[in-house]
Length: 226
Image (cartoon, rainbow, N blue to C red; front, side, top):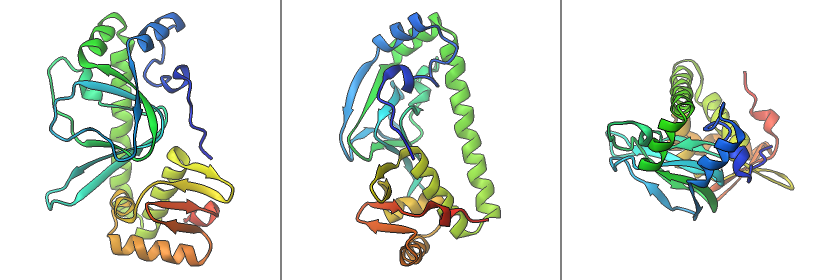
């Protein structure tokens, strides 16, 4: 079960680790709180990385187009996740993917000039951003390892369980995950046909309930595959 954190002092823990309380408040005060709408694009691949985001609530899909023109979902971010990391670098770079809000939410946003100025005053900020980037790199490495060593069913189950734990919304009968078949297939590195077939199989056994643009996890223990 996921509990979305709504207080800025909680959601900024990863970004502001090791920084004292007074400095944390000062850093958060330099941000702008932004409301997010469903399907709102926050930035696109190739645009200059000029903003740093901390997601307060909601979920954001991070993706880019593959060489075949098909969208590749690189990850789905939830409350407390930090993105737009390249904005803190000295040399301007481009965003590596497209960030799109999946539902109504809220984020704290710092412009590049502001976050770089704060990092000069609080060097821990730059170190924390590097640590977050390394965590994301480790997740991509783990995903590649699963592609080589796990079955399609195991990869899809893992992707759905991870989404449920990080961005799911508890309901009376399960955990709702806002994602469509194609996006889930891309995240699990399986074909859309395979994802659709497996979801139908799980629906028949009462493991999930599929609706347009979302999946409700009903019995998560059945997704715990060896």
